[in-house]
Length: 255
Image 1: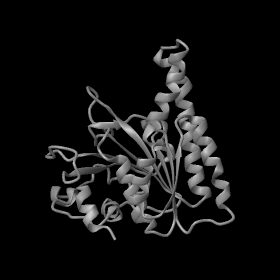
Image 2: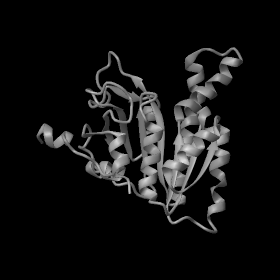
Image 3: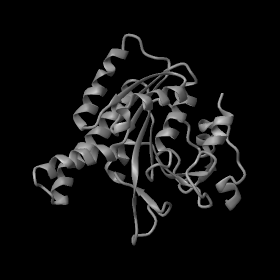
């Protein structure tokens, strides 16, 4: 495969579904996409745009947000203005909050939406908040904390996947990136690895890295992002395939 064909140079997407299809990823009910990358690169924004294009104004998006801005009414208004569909936005800073909010999905059974998207943003912040409990008690040994927190994160991702299956939903999980300095590329593809990596991989169908394109100078809407397939459960061999796009292009191409 030539480099031009693999990277799809000069490609201008119409929407996020177009981007994913070019990467051989078809968002479907019961599937979970893990989206990761550095802070402030646009992961949450991209997740909302994927939900927007997938729902196309005729369904429901439910957010489980662990970061403080999910408690901010202005941020909630921003999400709904981009989504152009009905949304429930839950502030779920701790693991117990995520489980409680997911258990409320039973209320949809009597009147299920035509399409449903579940978005969990982010596992990394939940991990930090749960770890904070131990630091507050004077427990600072990282191995001890990891032994308590990691199984909890695994349980969250398992419950999330099972809810996507039970309620016929497309799932998007978000986590942050960790450095692989000194250990080569993650899976031979990416310079960065998801900070939750293999603790959630068995509960996701695709792992995608979002970062600035190498030639981008800033993180504004006009600058190019790069979306890279790091792993695929359904089409092994597409790892490393990537597409460059800008959020400005997606806004021009939205329906």
